[in-house]
Length: 200
Image (cartoon, rainbow, N blue to C red; front, side):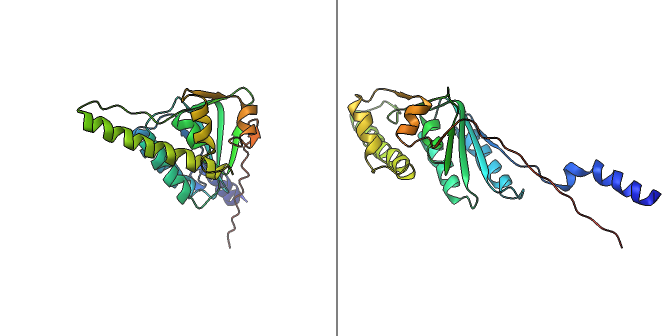
């Protein structure tokens, strides 16, 4: 009896070492370091036994190339990815949010979409080259967003053009109207952990 109690206490003490805790991927930046953390957290989430990957986004945006890297990792995921915004997801953050399978937005959260932007300066031919690349990036990010949200390929591109290419801020209700958001609210995440062991 004493031996069994001793074994029980050791297993309870080692609980966190025996079971991998579920991973919530948090995105705040889209620079190289942000992409690295995103990739590492996505990989960890695939090895915990969790049935889905929550991606919590709270960001003013950043590099469109960093966003595209994250989208590539998201598309390769073998588990369903659910994106969540409780405060803000702007620019690259809004695009990444729109790539989730289920997209949760808190009632008073804000999305913001706009054209891709970059500026390197330089000679006139370099400026022309930059402009051409920006056009390519715009078509790419807005078509990816439209495809995942069940809209026509040029749906968001047209709206941005109609708004004079100004920043487009959306409430949760507006985001749901345009199918960027699928659910208004914040999901509850619970984990049930069970350890079964026996000794002969």
